[in-house]
Image 1: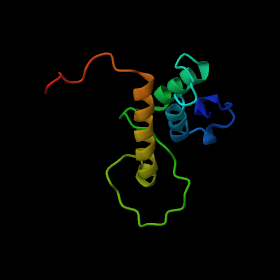
Image 2: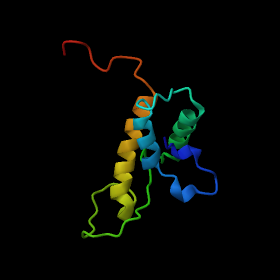
Image 3: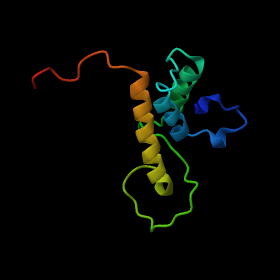
Image 4: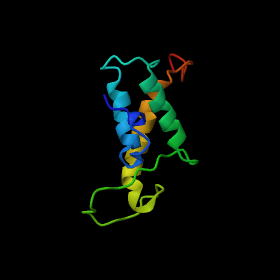
Length: 108
């Protein structure tokens, strides 16, 4: 299973939030416990790469095929892949930190 935090320091351009989050989604299937060092490094990587506004930056590597327009997400030309990366990061971290309290009362 791939968790981006396992990459050596010399390859930061291949480490992305999207790859790391996909590893989190696959972790339960692979029976990787949250206490595993690789899992913990991935959590640390995501928390360390989160931007001050709460998003994650992912650089676009694909050639633009559709006309660019600004949707209001940060990072300009890279906003679409960064929005996807932010979504994946939130899914991953929500699995890494289980809820400790109910979000709503039963019967509401």
